[in-house]
Image (tube, rainbow, N blue to C red; front, side, top):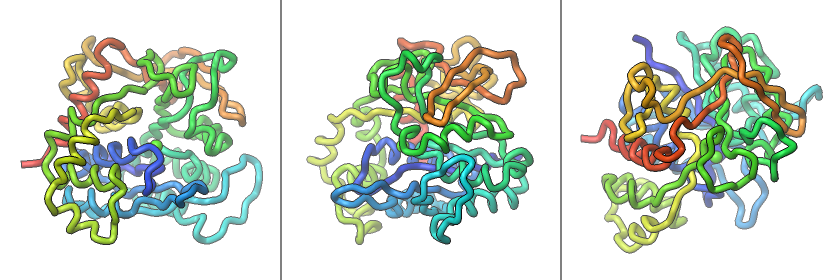
Length: 341
Ligand SMILES: [Ca+2]
């Protein structure tokens, strides 16, 4: 049995934009820490201009590595937008993430799965540079971006990860490898409703946070509370601030990407929230992926149709809208407690 090899691309910043990326990193690191997957590395998007300035959250990676006994590297992504059909001369620093992705695809003895929970830029740069490596050694790209309504004329707004670099998003639909597309919303950007072809759900953070070990609570309180990071390890291992834990436990968290992580690790979720092997969920599977054909224009507007098997393109589908949020919350809690005494 080979261990799946993963690359995780994320807009993981400090101060955070949306700290769901910190929850995602914790889930990915849990899967790596329990030996279900090998995390080859984390690609952190080049931060957008902001006041105060945002930084790629190296500290979050360091803290999670420590808590999970891992040594996953990270690399900062390109600051230069990807444009299709345009030859580019990139600065050395803007090629680092692309090179990391290509080197990993080239050197890995087993196919590599790529999760995108941020921008598509660096994977698109790598794909543009060497599509043959994706054909040869990419097990699949899990693309957490976009809107799932099949007709973009019905859309309101454009999903954030797409808007960051729409041409990069478009290029991924031409990748010569399986693409597992997980639209974040259905028609309306920032719609807060569980939909059939959209991955959004939310939960009250305390449902998970209260039951985690202290070090993991401090990992979340550090980023949510925007604590100083120079003492990142002693802060992690220090006492838990009970008042901060209470404050952040009462806040809700939007989530999008957990289903793809589980699917890529060969598992499914029952409507009860129990995590089981992919083949064991049957008709009780909370979500699944259906074969489709997709056309995407350079503004990031997608049109899709159901297809027979064999397209290498799959769309995420919620099978049970009523139980999706509660079951996913239980699954996240199970994941984060995995492999801990
Ligand atoms: Ca994100």
